[in-house]
Amino acid sequence: KAGVTQTPRYLIKTRGQQVTLSCSPISGHRSVSWYQQTPGQGLQFLFEYFSETQRNKGNFPGRFSGRQFSNSRSEMNVSTLELGDSALYLCASSFLGRGADTQYFGPGTRLTVL
Amino acid sequence: ELKVEQNPLFLSMQEGKNYTIYCNYSTTSDRLYWYRQDPGKSLESLFVLLSNGAVKQEGRLMASLDTKARLSTLHITAAVHDLSATYFCAVDMEPGNTPLVFGKGTRLSVIA
Image 1: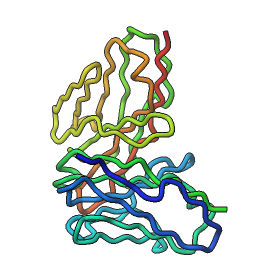
Image 2: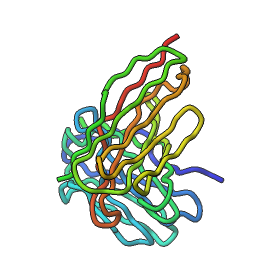
Image 3: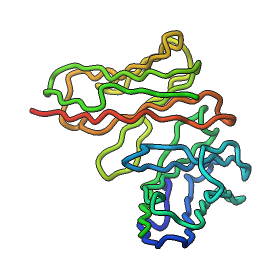
Image 4: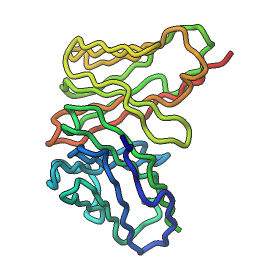
C-alpha cells in the first residue's frame, strides 16, 4: 500500500507570493491533517479535513487555508508569504480521523521564504 | 488554553539503561499520542492512548496515560542506539473541536 505523498518536497518562494502544497493520503483514508514545524514554535496543528469538510482549525491567520477533494487529496494554500512561514509542512492521513485512529505522516514539504 | 510540557527536553543515555520521558498537560483530556521523529525526517506515530490507565507497548517502548494526574510517560527499556530520535507527545481535548497541541519534544541520544 502506498504511503502518504506530499508534493513538492522542497519549495523556495519570496515574501508576498503565495504557495499551494499538495497531500495525497493513503488509499481509503478519509481524514487529512496538516501541521507546521519550525525550530522556534515546534509542531503546530493547522487543520483537519474529513470527507471534504474542515473539522478543525488551529490558531493560524486566514492566510492559511486548505481544502479536500472528493478523492481525499488535500491542498494547503498560504497567501502573502512571510519570512516566518518558512517551515516543514507535514500532512497526515487516517481512516477514521484524528483522535480515533493512527495517523500516517507524509515526508513533508520544506518551504523556504526569502 | 491547553499547555503540554515534556521533560526532559534533552536526554543522553547509555545503551542498556532504562529511562522515562514525561508529558504533563494542563487541561482535562483522555486522548494522548506519542510520535517519533528522526533527524530530517517526518513523524512516525508510536502510540494512541485513549483512556485513563491505558498502557501500550511496542518493543522497548511502553507508554501509559494517567488522566487524573494529567500525565503520560514513555518508558524506554534497555536502550539501543536505534532509539535515538526526538519523541513528541500531543494532547487532544476534543477531536473535531479543538486543535491538537504538541509538546516541545525530547531529543534522545543513546550512546555506547
